[in-house]
Length: 177
Image (cartoon, rainbow, N blue to C red; front, side):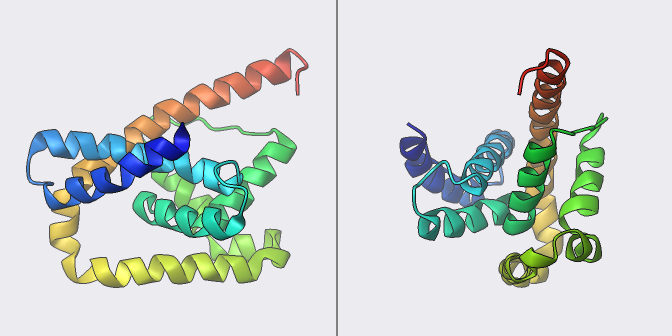
């Protein structure tokens, strides 16, 4: 079912990018980015496809759309799942951005915490920089056009992550793993 949804998500993403001028499309694009975020999680956990040769490139694509480096996301998620210690007190989308910068973009911290993953982190940084090289010349237009959609995505991600955080705390309190 997810693979079928992915086949519709790619053309829908292209449509939204090309038709981003209307408010309805900007709202739709918030949801499109959010679905890429959900797929990013599946790609990082290698649940989508059996081959990493498919999961990783699509994971990088999803990460570029969500502005989160893929291998950093994957590593932090594995770490959190192993330790079951998610303590997030987010309220606003800006806090989600702060959390992302602190955890996924803090190279010095990642280098120190996960030295064995440095090569993969460099691959993610390289992929994100390629995307930014395309965006940077368009920065004012990019954020005017996509900023509202990205803010909508952050709000959706906030609601989703708060729900997951609540379920993890509940399962830990009940002694379930």
